[in-house]
Length: 56
Image 1 (cartoon, one colour):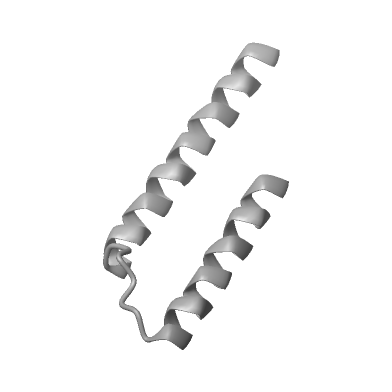
Image 2 (image 1 turned 135 degrees about the vertical axis):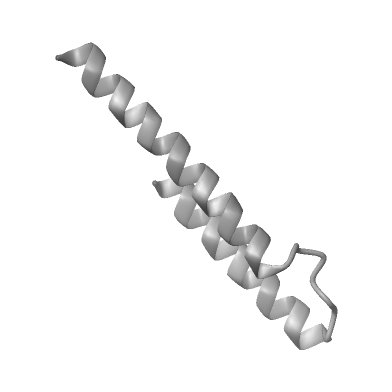
């Protein structure tokens, strides 16, 4: 989780710099980021279920 917070903070910092320099971000549209979030959450869900299944 610590790595995720660092990544989020770095992203926010870069976003602020881009906004101040009036540079358009090369990031994909918001809907693509929502899809990526879904993929990450799905991966975490499967990993959690598999770890519980092997422990029990």
